[in-house]
Length: 79
Image (tube, rainbow, N blue to C red; front, top):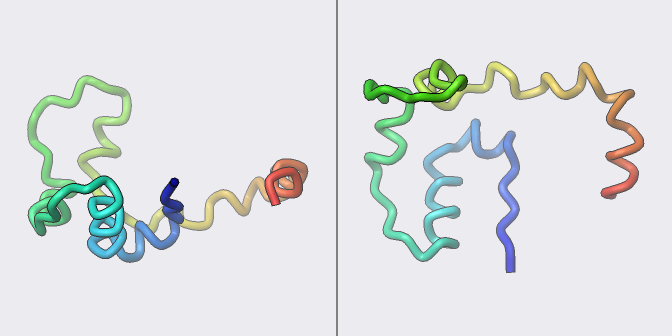
């Protein structure tokens, strides 16, 4: 059994999608999960630390479309 999470839906509705994920994992939901997104002040020892601090946003929502032609064989393969 698996849970499909669409990136587009997650960035547009992080609380609702977060609740779905928590429910699927059998975890109790806490609104602080979403309230704390992008508020991380602790050291994050990864190259993506600036992305973690940026929080959930829609800036890159349709960026993949720039590569649609190159991705076409993969899209057909998984369809």
